[in-house]
Length: 188
Image (cartoon, rainbow, N blue to C red; front, side):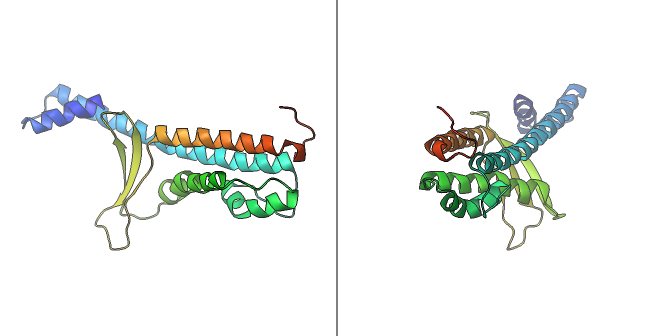
């Protein structure tokens, strides 16, 4: 961010001709931005894996059922049937809402914007807030058409907080149903 601030200040000052040091500063900015962008994309890849592992852990913890799921996406659509078949306490509405929220914020964003983005007009930008230091990604189109939508991810620090809260809620749900665990008696 400091690199970008210095480069922008030079541009705003009406500076003419770039010195060798200013060109190096600009090149470092490209390098920083590319690395940050790759870190954000990597975060989404691993966060999606984490959500899938949470779904798999729930299935492993409570055991087989007619209703199966191996991914977070599958779990959301099938969790109510699974809970009923396994005789578990119903999933609290806030937890169900958190599942859906993270599906949209992590998995859907990763799938739609990062992994399966096929439009040749797609542009991704790495965004940041100078004041808070938060970073995120934006997806937009060159020469946007009527149906095109600009999408922004949530700042990573905020997303990490939501995931942390989700993990705590899942653990609480597991503990509330520990007497129904397939793994046998689990003592808290």
